[in-house]
Image (tube, rainbow, N blue to C red; front, side):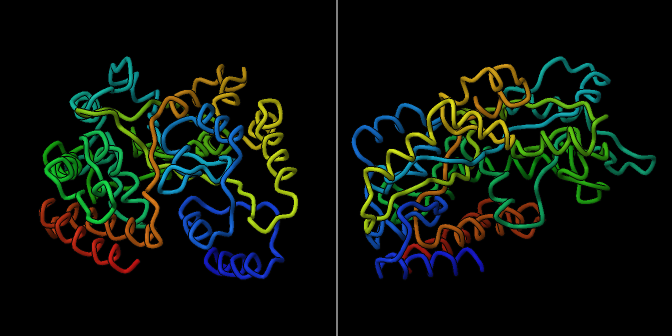
Length: 352
């Protein structure tokens, strides 16, 4: 059963009064249940807990409706930060991860290696340029946010990611390839496989790779860092799963009591540690396991957003990612690419 099929069946069951007391939609589908009035806002005490404990804006937004009403408790999720190869840093004489765009370019240049033919053999910074277009958008988004970019106007009636800030951010992303030449379409491997194989020195990814590297590539010496800032703070694109209570539940008070128990520091910390998950609540992140984990700390310090709620959010992210790829392939200039993406996303906005 696909996610769409699951959500459709769940909405039918809830409308028929036979749905569950609690369930976990994704943040991108929460809007469907809000509009169908299939879920209830949290009680005041739960809302205050969520506001105080959400790790960042993305976590809070993921459990809130468009008007800011809180409908659930964040249960699990993640967002990206930057990974770097510690041995390559040492060899290049780099003492710390880059904190700014200028430092990223300087660091990436020092880390880039070429073969005898002059082709990139080791990417100083891996630019996401192919694969799932949703992922392409999400790996470019931190640079967009770091340049002060905003996706939509205040009422989410019009795309504004093709603003000068957006165009400059995409130009910077393209320049990493063609001006600074720290990555290439000809590079032997990219992304996670390239990082494991020694063909990528720095890249942006989610924290589940930490456990994977430790298990699958125990000899790989690596570190993590927050994503370099531009004129604003870099922010990752978060994926957060909330737990909500159905409006048809006859046990709403007990259901919210259960959610509060599941979110208590002792229980949530035990669950997250056992599953090697990134915490989304501050009380869990304060546990000694996380405070002492240097590899996870940058993820907990990293600012993050979610894509604004809309029934077509998923499709919009794919559209933007498609045109980021087009710019990287030099099929359009950054401005042309974002202008066309904005045109197509605005059509999706009107389709709501």
